[in-house]
Image (cartoon, rainbow, N blue to C red):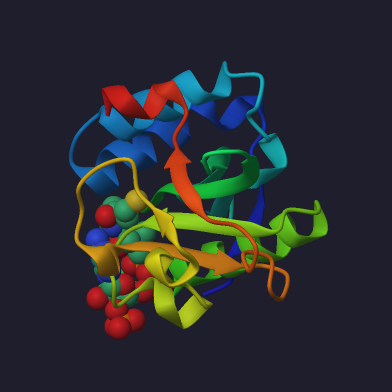
Amino acid sequence: MKIQIRPENKNDYKIISMVNDMAFGQENEGILIEKLRKNRKFIKELSLVACMGNEIIGHILFFPIKINSEKESFESLVLAPMSVIPELQGLGIGSQLVEKGIAKAKKLGHQSIIVLGHEKYYPKFGFKAASEFNISPPFDVPDQVFMAKEILPDALKDIAGCVEYPKEFKDL
Ligand SMILES: CC(C)(COP(=O)(O)OP(=O)(O)OC[C@H]1O[C@@H](n2cnc3c(N)ncnc32)[C@H](O)[C@@H]1OP(=O)(O)O)[C@@H](O)C(=O)NCCC(=O)NCCS
């Protein structure tokens, strides 16, 4: 099965929301993406779609966030949300989206990525518990589901603090 991964364009907006609605079985994530798109920090090169022929069957978004220590603030990205239509889950499409997304983020000069997700899924892409980098979530979640990845070696070595999500995530 040949999958093509490319940045979103204007014609994709509606179908991206639909793919997210199908994958999550609710409309919250599609609405979140639409709200984030209106935020000036949205990076369209980091909103990637997976296509099979002309059909969009998956999507991943990386959005800028901050890691705040008492004195400083550091730029990072959050991986969220991510979706593959239910009929095609478990075939490696999600993994291709993550890998392509990380490569694209690196190319654009980003240094690290945060994700709140399944503890067995993300470590294969190099994510570790964020607590290993002294990075904490702004909400109460089990330690192992809040993860961070250094895109560049030691990118998080001298960074510690609490992650600040964009306000749009608070309505999720
Ligand atoms: C999570 C998701 C994007 C993965 O895409 P995918 O194409 O199915 O992923 P892959 O085929 O690359 O990987 C499949 C692996 O993901 C695991 N997986 C499937 N759904 C998962 C989920 N919700 N959380 C964590 N792991 C999941 C499978 O067990 C499988 O594990 P394995 O590789 O050890 O066998 C897709 O399953 C999905 O859209 N789920 C619903 C939406 C969701 O939960 N998104 C993630 C939170 S933002």
